Amino acid sequence: MFEVTACAPGFLGSRMKIAYVHYGDYTPKDVLTPLYEYSQAVSGKCDVAVYVRAHRDTIPGRERLNIYQVCRQYWCTKITHIAFIVNLIRLINKENFDIIHVFSFPGCSLLPLFCRRKSRRWIIDIQSGCIFSHVSPAYDKLTALEAGSFDNIFVLSKALTDKLFGPDWHSAGKITVVPLGANIKRISRAARTGNFWKKIINRDPATVLLYLGTIDATRRIECLLEAFRILALEHAGKDLQLVILGGRSNEITRLRSAAAKLGIQGAVTFPGKVPYVDVPDYLANAHLALAYVPKGPVYDAQPPLKTLEYLAASLPVVATNTLGNLEIIQDGYNGVIVNSDPGAYAAGMSRLLTDPALRHHVSANALKSVEGYDWGALSERLVKLYGTLSA
Image (tube, rainbow, N blue to C red):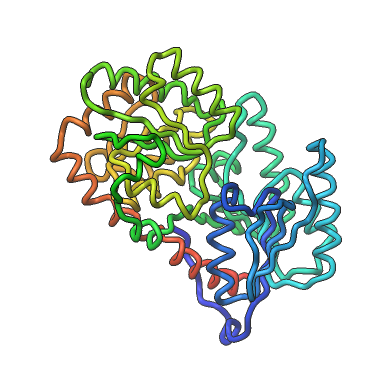
């Protein structure tokens, strides 16, 4: 958890002007969670501007929260990337901000270079390292190099900071660990409802196992499918349904084919992407949550948002033993920790399915184990940190 020192006296008496920059969309199904939560909460105390790519489904702004659509998506991603940076520099140079909070993307170091006088402080927020193993070391070094152009650096965890900046990062002085959160109020308000799954899969399974999140090839969801196949064979006759929430149509097609080859296509459902604000309903109606993150150099240091949201919904969680999951899950206390190979993961799921006492115990401890990660509380601390940095 990040610490905040005292702000300059009276500084927060007037509204600060905060800008958020993200090379991505601000739509119900594709919004970057920290960007959405911070911009929505911080705009209650500050004047907020959000700079994102243009999209027909962009979430509208409101008083004190302005959404600027920097450029559209061109046929070539490189052209889009260049157009975004060029247009962004032009737009930012028309304004003056106390803080410009940039979610890291390649080329973002050009912003403080060409717009330096338009902000008291420039912050780069590094949400992850590179997810492609063949270029990961070079990409991570580039990210660390670009971060040097900013006044302050936010990183999700100590493990990710060590990976990007080395073991002596603490001596740099301008790096702050700012963790992910969960919208505990929204998630806890959601309730189990009758016939919820009938609307999605035309039946109401006895046990729904839920995976929430990205399903691109680097996530190795095929291993999760194999683990579920093993589980289904071990518990033949039990009505188990695996629901994989998220992913684009081409990724879903690939995984449906993989499920068919394993002979489990009837027991696996792919609802696709759903609006971020609807996710709590899926959490409330699941029975078991799957924090499957492949163990390895790419994702090991990455704290998973899904794990926090599962715990906020008081779900029993089966989590792989990545450093990110181990920061949140304690085996036997608020979840089960296993290796990421299919056999071990299947055993973890079976452990919770066959032990009602353990299921009740980890569920009872889940919510209180993440109370400090509420987005509302994190946003309050962030505003105070902005004030300290800008003073």
